[in-house]
Amino acid sequence: MIPPVIDPIVQRTGADCALAALAMAAGLPYRTISDVALQLTEKPHMQGLWVADMRRIMRQLGYTLRNVKPDRLMEYGCGVMVVEFPKGERHCVTVYHDLIVDPVNGLIWEPDAYYQDSGANATRGLIIGEPIRGRKSDLPKRSKSKRIQTSVPSHPRIGPEKACRTVRPRNRKAR
Image (cartoon, rainbow, N blue to C red; front, side, top):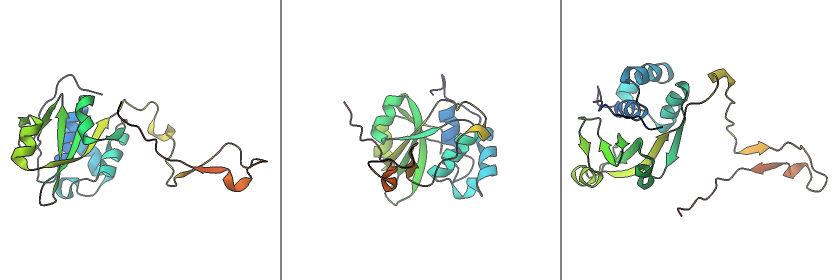
């Protein structure tokens, strides 16, 4: 999902860069993201957010948030990039059509200039998916286990111990 225009949003406190970056990438008002964050997390404006918190916020708003490699984020057109500074601090910026929008000051940067000036390294890319269809209560609960139950509890040739299989992520290489 790429908003047709981006409104640079400046973060309100020292730790709400993720809220501002999500608002810009989703094309939503800062207040909307902030209100949901206050419902789901403790002190998001003072303590910042983990990626899991960002996922919960977007899910509550009816969107998905997917991981992508930081170097591939530019190909998607819009998203949130997590960067890490030399002292280990992390920060969220918005990527919009090959440009970086920094919520600290609202400046729009060429990526190379941003990395050189700030000394930051991109660590994670996040893209906002299409709206989820259905109400929140209709969405299936995500299993904490990495194993899923197959439709057949036991199979005559493989037995009940192999009725579950481990879900492994696909290895997708760039073509």
